Each structure stands twice: as structure tokens, then as C-alpha cells.
Length: 126
Image (cartoon, rainbow, N blue to C red; front, side, top):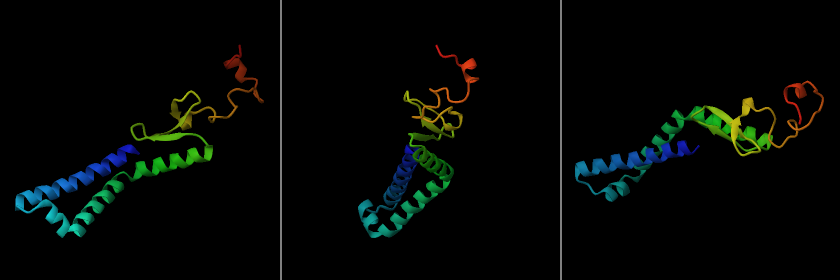
């Protein structure tokens, strides 16, 4: 999510730099231009932010889905834009992909011998 906000901040800076460049080219005072055309500058910033949000909509949806999935599991989750997957925090503090996690964090499914004795053959208890 921090990457999305970085893009939004860079878009805001880009709009301000374009306005500053225009003012320098035309020989107009920067703050005077901003004050005189505040509505249009604000509209340009809003359009830039909406454009960035539109470009990042898939990652925003996946991050929101991952957040609510973590809330329903009562676990800490995060969405990795680089890996494109939702990750859940393990008891040791590391994050693993939520689709490949064996048991939910905080549950005792990985510690107990409920109904399956066949798992003891693969994971013997010392």
C-alpha cells in the first residue's frame, strides 16, 4: 500500500512541477497563478490521483481483499505487490503465502494429533 501512496505523492509533485514550469515559461508568479487558478490546479491534481488509482485498481482490490481476509481470520496479513500474493504472518513473525499455509496462525491444528495418525509417519514426534 505504501507504493500506491508513493505514486500518488509523485503524481502531486508532477502536477506542481508542470505548473511551476509553465509559470517560469510564461513569466508569471507561481503562487499568483496557483491562487488565481486554484480550481483548475485542484482539478488537475484530482484527475492525476484518479488516473493513478485507476492504473493501480487491481493491486488496490487485492490489498483490500487480503486485509479483510486477515480480519476474518483474526491474523495479520499483507499484500505483496511485487509477488502478487496475500501473505499471512506466522507465529515466528515471518510472512508466508496464505494459499500455501498449512494451518491458520494461532490455531492448534499443527500441534495436535486430532484424527490423523498418518501425519505422524511423515512428521514423527520426538
